[in-house]
Length: 582
Image (cartoon, rainbow, N blue to C red; front, top):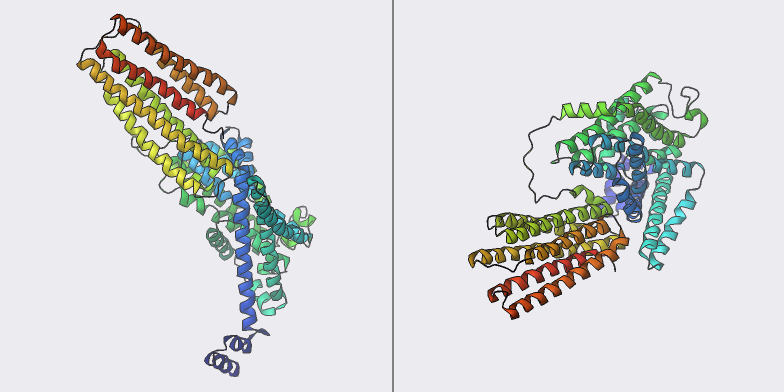
């Protein structure tokens, strides 16, 4: 009672710290307890920021590789698992990988079967961070990792090279993860000698309560790696939940279910298959968790700090709970993948039954096919998808050109409505791509991605101009029909040849820009020169016919403009081919 009175007297005298110091808890002042809790929270913040630094900059460094990796989707199970594990190891987040996968499924680029294999691999890849933390803590090499914080920061400050700066920030991120982990461990160390804290932790043994805690904690942090690493930090200080045994492992199991929340939220408002992919992630992790939970409940002698089957990794790492936890995390995800991989089609079937197919509305042609908002988390992948949608826009513009050109040759006014529809679609797609490019630029992008974004901005302008030039043809057709204009014999064939060369040039542009066949640039340039020469030749021949009275003067404006428009389309295609040269 006297301590409480002193506590409030301290507040009355505005000496808050003094008030807290007078009030003790388990032999330690309340102010000291508050300081330790604040230190742990601050260290946890540094730890999570380090994760973000590491993830963002690893994505910048290897984003192009990820883009190529996901462009090579395969129906082979182990290839899919490998893709998921590698991509998650790179971006240090299974959540980012699964959200990307849902984006690919939503866009129709990846099948549900392929997505299931990748998601299984992502669960394996997410265990790497906890392994590094456990081994670093156990062998007292954390100071080496922490030194990376300074080294990485210096690399970022000194270097002018974008790639070196990203490497430096990734290294600094890893250093910050271990710095936060070390501070957390030190702050927790004070409590390992306190009987009240030890008794409290020993009494937390309810498996279902621990499982729910793991689910909720992971859902809040949106990272099972972060949760596992924090548990490892506690274990390194002898703060074992449940006092040892299997108790702490129920949190690890819960974290695997909690890690599905990000994907579930991301799937809201997506296609049926995308929602099924997120459900498969939930089913896979939940069924695996329940199987392991039953197993742990049966062998209640415990895993952490005791024997398990007498032959498992726990026996190999006896007396080292942090490594045991990390190994269990990896062991659980690898075994679940091996168990469920043969039943991939079964998981797909189950998800299809739980989320049945509904009658789909006809998709608006102006909707983006390859890009999905979920790719914004990985800018390199987003840029790659926007390239594909840009050339889909170009396909429509070139189709508009063909319809408009053929309508002119055939004197078909009715076909002009199709040109207007195509051009309206091109305008809508252009606006959507531009909006996404702005959003991608607002994120953390590499210099290479920024150059691609600039090129894409220019390209959608060139493609829109092609559609506008196609629209010019509709005016020539109306004038041709209205005034009953007739062109000289053989002219239509030469114009058709020039039109054909443009489509050939466009095919080269797609191969160069989408497939990376840069060796075709010279061939494309020669083709563009040939189109230029054709324009000069056709105009010269036309002037000669006019002077000889073989061509009607009223044809002059339409013919010259039409030929010049065809040549200008070749210029715009050439601009696209060379848009990434600088």
